[in-house]
Amino acid sequence: MKAIFSFAFTPLLCALFLNLAYPPFNISILAMFILVPLLSSLRLSHRHRFLKGWLAGFLLQATAFYWVFGTLQDFGGQSWFISGVGAFLFWAYHGLDIAIWLWLAPLALNWKRPVWQAISLASLWSVIQLDLFSYVFPWNMGAAFIGTPILGQSATLWGDDGTSFLVTAIGMTLALVRQQAEHRRWGWQPLLGILLMCVGSLIPLPAPDRELRVAVVQPNLIPWAKRDMQSSFEIFEAHAQPTRTLFDRVDLVVWPETALPLPLDQSPQYQDALQTLVNQLNVPLVMGTMGSGPDVDSYTNEIWLFAPDSNPQRYIKRKLVLFSEKLPWILSWAQWFDPNLGAFRPGNESNSLSFGELELIPLVCYEATLPRFVWQFQGNMIVNVTNDAWFGKTKASSQHLQLIRGRAVECGIPLIRATNSGISCWIDPEGKIHEPTALYESATPIYQVPYRAALHPSLQKYGGFALRLFYWLIASASIFLGWRNRRPQRVSVEGPES
Picture (tube, rainbow, N blue to C red):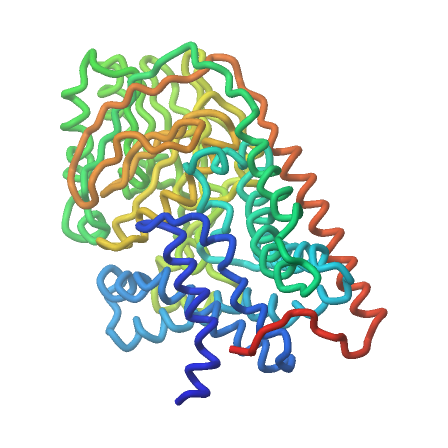
């Protein structure tokens, strides 16, 4: 028992740091140290390092994404056994990222100075987490800092991904440099990383010169009600009724993801009803809906913009959710058991939606968690429609919100978030959340959103690219040094193995 506890102690510590760093606790500074407890494991064999890294990754996933079990059982209609197996496999697969990193981690010890060992460890992790590993729900350590004073503005220059590299490098440097006998203090190296994070706060944000009154309709329809218990007309009316009360009060109305769970492009009667509603209110409407895919019995996840006396505009979701909207080819046989599983097809254009002088960046749910994907768009404002009802009353909704906050900071423009069951809100270019709605309550908040008419150039494209190039070069150099020095290395990390 003592041996089991000793083996599991540092993985448990990693999971504790992760959960405290993100909502609901938001102790963001702990994100720097999520992987640090595993440094004491570098003395272990390849096999034991891999197993310990996998256990850490598994516990991180199981404690952060515990809601997967409830989603499969309550909303997927699966038995507790199938839900348990599915959740276990989900956590086990995602736990491989830290297993791979810890297995490769001794390559960093080919660098002589501890600061370069720390940078190498952070580079290897960044390559795995940000570039190579295929997540169902991506996350990174930089996202934990969005919304915090000064450090939260790091994404303005470096992006969420670049901030994640800096955060990991700072934590590793603090751990390794301090452990060297010749160093009485930590020195200047960690301060350099912190200063690089602070640079983003020195970049002036352009002052807004316009204001948009935006109403978000949050009907609080649970997914199975949309699918089985209510007619399409009842679902339409659940969104349309609160919208009709907004006459002369707003400049834009936003409905959430799949506000109409039917192929709108094949439903002229609903297109006409929506256009009539918009013409009567004289207010544009942005809404999530489904579309018909290119194949038989396939669909698309879309955002439509209806403006008064204008033709509708469409955006088709490009980044689909793995195991839900799409299946890897190796699991394509699962559609024989559930034809709706993996039946969605992606779009191929990153187009904005426009009315008047406003260019809206449309993002459907999961797409807003992908920083580099959003680089392809340009606009005055981001509109993110989503349906988080699948998560239940868990911390998953606040986690999802935390992971998308960085898009407003990176782009320097406000983000409007419309959800089916909460959390709806708007986010300013500093990453602050304004007027969030409660979970599982119907609401129609009206937001006064300041914005700038002129398009704002995003610097994080260049800063993020520079850091990405840097950590790829360091990771490649570490692998090269490891291949050249193919002999046992003296581990410079002190302290007992946990």
